Length: 168
Image (tube, rainbow, N blue to C red; front, side, top):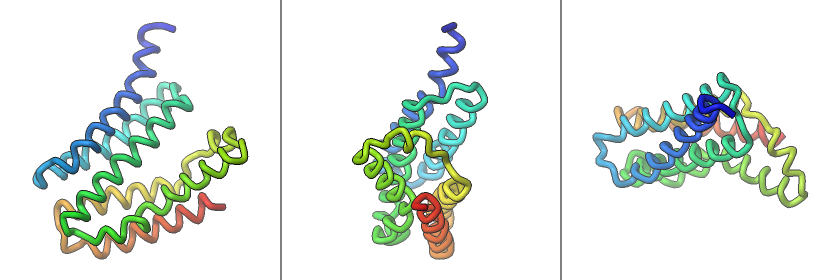
């Protein structure tokens, strides 16, 4: 494997690791930095997948790391924003219902030793829509809290639709 190829495998994973660092820092960050952290978290999520697909360097371990980084970032940011009073923490299970469904499918496939099926599970458009809604919710909560209830409702709807889609 050439040095360039190794770098192409490394960069998307470094972006996922960077997102884990952003997730760890988010609860400690002052509110005026939230918008930048949300942009960094969402941007690194978009960029790592784009680069891995474009360079044809997708791997099972890289996908797993990406998924863990996505969930850690989103949960960290949602909890921090909720604790700040922008919306009730009781909404979080509905906001991440799609993620909980995917986790349940992972446990189910692991229990029945059908892990290969889970590994082959692809992201669906409903998943992308739910993630976009979650990021929009965070952006609106950071920039214009009065609009949170409307975006919160849309985010919950998209999360439920994605959960049902994955549950099928």
